[in-house]
View: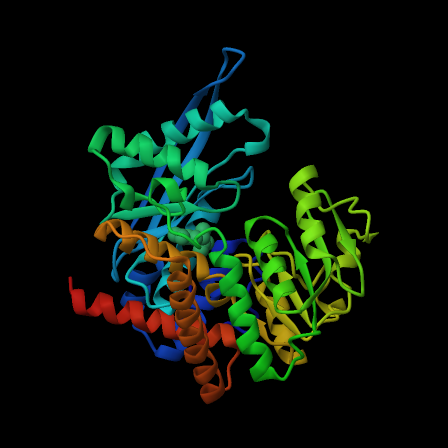
Length: 423
Ligand code: GLU
């Protein structure tokens, strides 16, 4: 791929790998990196593809395909989640792995970037089938994992229980190794505050940005796409901060109340029914209308490539976009928002709270210590604020979008580590 940044019309990728490449190229251009250094930072260090056969309840054997891509480990062991979703393929996992390299560098945690995934709809599997799939995937990927090699965590479609199976499978062959995976249940060495960490990190970053960009905080309005681990915790925290959550959607539907949803009631409705849809104290909302709800903060907290030129960017009625999901905005939509003066808090900053507390979990495991919840929260807040400040300062200095500033900081750190390590 051309890396000189001279193309007049950039391609319009909506795939995560393509999006990440374009951002990287822009940072590489600003930093005037040599072609050979760019290759070093662009091409994944190691990629693993595994066949995952699973014995199902009916006696049949179903085949799944699993991936683990270790993008760059110059700054430390590679780190990143494992995703269970039908869209998972090599390209998506590769793009998300690169995103983790930049995210860990930006937050200055001593990791590189990786990502894993299995192409499966976890909702179609029974619990014990999911356990078998996780164990088989772990068994076959284990040679590339380890506390000082590559450390998985939860991502879309996986949770603390999946991490517990991964830990058990890995430890059964190699001895008890809690630091091989983060996002574990607390009773197996997980960190307090890890489950809420991504949502809390988003909230802290939003609050900082609200102050800087002069947007009402207490009394302001937020719309959130996604009510899973990230969207759910974020809604609860915004409610605590007296930011009104006016609209929420998930895969099965959505709800809106322009005076603010009753978040605790919505959370218990969603826990009971599995969706926000049909929450009685609000009006129903479809996906088309969600993107047009007037609000201060629009927060995509689910899938990638949801804010696009074709579908919605011209109609967004918000003062700030906060990327709680990975790669929710396509590059063209991003450019349009920048020209309209709507700040976009980029994913590698906004949603980095998860990997920050993963770092705390790994640290606690290696030291066989456990920190109190308040300590985790305080340290997370400090890290998020420091990274936010680095990004805003550079964006202002260079008059570039926040995302370009974030990538520039991250790419420079990884390039420096690569150079120091030598060949
Ligand atoms: N899956 C999360 C992310 O995309 C967390 C990764 C981790 O904790 O290693 O940032």
